[in-house]
Image (tube, rainbow, N blue to C red):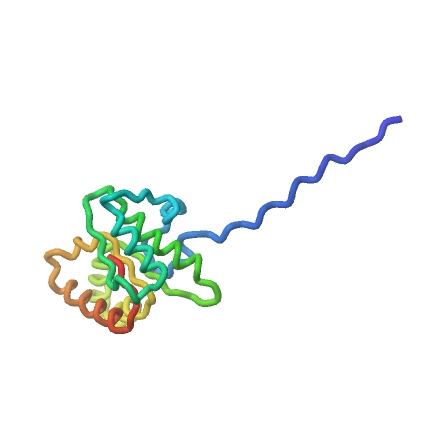
Length: 169
């Protein structure tokens, strides 16, 4: 006698991990987080130990220690990886409240400032950049020789710093 045997049911799908990147950062962020740019995947050596430790301290207590956090090194040595590691850590610990993290390249900051001046929307620009919990700007050297934008950034910097909001450059 033949009996039909139902195929085994597949195991339940694992819970999806929360998406990292765009939706968790402020909408105006121009940089998307890379899933593998976390502290767990960062290789610590004698030349980057201090930058790594400072980045971890910022991720633990934003606005308290190393504020602003300024990371400087040659190209390809992990600055962006550390910036994103801080963002990933802050977002993973952000249970029950919404930390506003605005992460963009300096070139985008400059272009958005120029556009705001051109469109007469300087007050909206100021509000957007001065009302975040964490401002992350990659490649800040792009501000060199841009006096008017340096002045605007200086005021944004002071506003955030006085409010004990974290600045990472």
